[in-house]
Length: 203
Image (cartoon, rainbow, N blue to C red; front, side):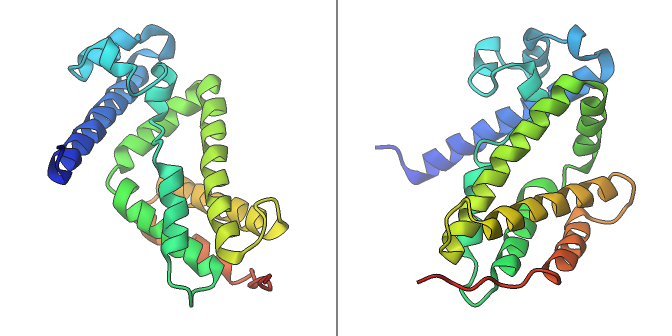
């Protein structure tokens, strides 16, 4: 039987491989341009085979953007795991701050380089927006479940979109200031929460 320890080690190795491929893709495309970098180049830089590359990404564009397939479900779970006495806006705030602290806070230089690369290649910008929409849908689903409303109700849609906007503002500011992303996101979300009242719960 596979032990939990072995499963944990395997998961860590997968995350390390995904991260190495993403770093290599961003660096190579920043240096040479998207059209002049191949999957084989990225795989070689990460010391894996092209076959292994395709276990993680559908193509070089995805590798540059580095989407985390677990991010959406993880964020939804974080929203639902917050204490019941928190308002929904506060639960979203805590969930997003936890996600940033656990997954993003130490990757500032990579994020900034990735954003520069994306801005230079419109095809990447379109895929980035698409990925952000998928993540936002998971966030909206978590909000809807927490307040007992349909996922297409105005409140979860609005709060999810507003939280996404707060995150984008924080990342934009992060690119031009030395302040930690966590602090910038907290500031943006606090301003957001001050203007959002809790909706009435449906039985």
